[in-house]
Image (cartoon, rainbow, N blue to C red; front, side, top):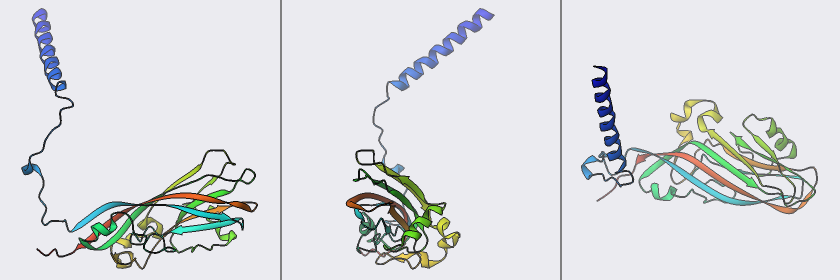
Length: 235
């Protein structure tokens, strides 16, 4: 009886092995989806659409005074850099042809900078603020940002050393401390302007001495943006 069970067990394992080998023979073969398998939409575009949008820039910062800051406005995907104006994120104009209102739910920032000085090592400070810091913060206010638990810092290496990189993320509901952002329309805006309530990414450099050379700061900002209030599409 035991020998018969062993034989049946071997045959069962053999069949399973053959089935697995057949499945493996199809690996790498592209699969196709027939049109009937796609989930249909109620209209051309859904009533609400979430998208990841990205903004990238290189900002020149001078440490002639020993400190400097520059801020961006991620909650306003229509115009991220208030100092320049007209800095909408890539893809924003295209999706705005279908929706009339937007809301930014969260954002991430990546800041990279190299030190051109061989004698002075400044501190890089990056973080979110729920009030406009402007581009003219005092040295004391910039230093106070280090005490903010949402801020991150990195001491730049001297000339020839590796670049310093800081990454931060923040949600609009978290920085304001209330989920009201989903019901208060001050956190939303028409696609032709910016919201009433905004928050900001602040990037600063502080040094113990004046540096004559310019610092080139690479900034990459990503936002999770929600578009809604679908525009009527004429035939």
